[in-house]
Image (cartoon, rainbow, N blue to C red; front, side):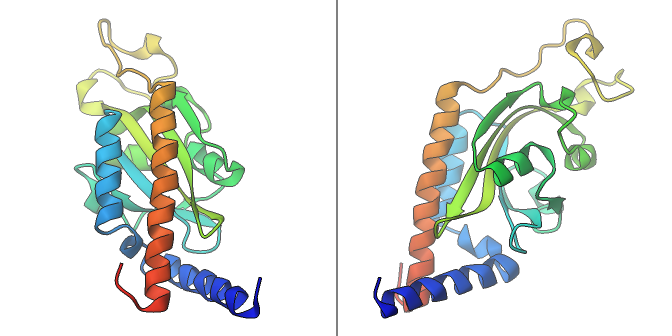
Length: 203
């Protein structure tokens, strides 16, 4: 690698670190958001989020969400990057598909509690930018707690649900593959955006 190319890589990484810290949502405006909307619709997810790390891997913050309560937590909620199924995808670098998430003791339930939902099924896919894992894309199928008025505590198994209640379906292997492809394309779109910003050219 030439000295100029190495310097450009260093500048790109510095630029990415500043954007993640100060304006992470700007990475997802426009085409990236449209890609995410289309992908989530295609796998019939109730909603999805992009979690990014603003501090080099200490925490994860949802910087984009397409659900009805997005404004109540996007950009403000923070979760330790080592916690929950989202944190596992971030720290391990491996995508996962989980069912019966609300029964899983690994789940960080703080956000679900504040939104009045149980996460039933979830896909978590690492998002790589400029060659490094900078976040996670999640897709979820939810149970609204209002639909279970007689439930007093966090369910530990399906036996805790009211008779006749049917939870949402799980995600398929094909759904996970679709989101892995989406994450790869999204990473390239954002890398291109960073390159354009760095070179001061239009996307």
